[in-house]
Image (cartoon, rainbow, N blue to C red; front, side):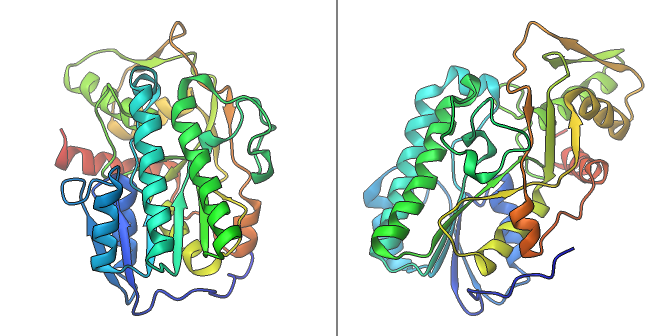
Length: 317
């Protein structure tokens, strides 16, 4: 394990804005920042509509954050991306543009834009390193979200080049954990399968359905590990190249479904509907650069799934 890079930016005593804090990632970043000696600023979409430039400018001028975690986004799985493409591209473009531009105008010292692993081409060499950005066509099932997230990465780079802003971006791999969205119409795969397995167990069914063949290969990162990585990068990274965040633990969707069945205590078996889309056949991130800075994930897949299921039972089921 590499020795952790020395801090290049201190959060000590700073006013730190975490937008999207009621979402899974934002809530995890807030939990992580509670151990830092900083003043936390949070906003809801009811308080500040980040899609409206005037709302963003008024709030940031009044509250003057010094560091910003730009996490707020319209998100969802394959079905949501397919049925709400206009929302996915417009909402995310507007949020990124308004927050990044106003951060420059109000003198924000450091901004971290959270991108997504879906910014990379569908057929990118695996595992995907950061240089693969914009080298090929995107995965069609999430292209609208991906285009918006690519724009956010490029905005951070452009403001860094033109104005000297210390704006950075990071791409985490598939996330799961407490606070995830378990609605089958809009959830990502880990949350959807956990919800399905729980329902099948409660109803005494012998199976639960998994979209696709089960063969796609993925990484899954526990959200509190992701939050720790984002804070780590805020303090220790300053470069225009986006940086990947992944655990390095590889498995198929079939293996994920089987792990979820074990965690839930479901005695049956998942079934696979190959008529449904698989998404990218393989999506793994090369997180070598982050590892060289001295960070690695500490939560194993099944440990993270157990924590997620406990939260689900208390807050959703």
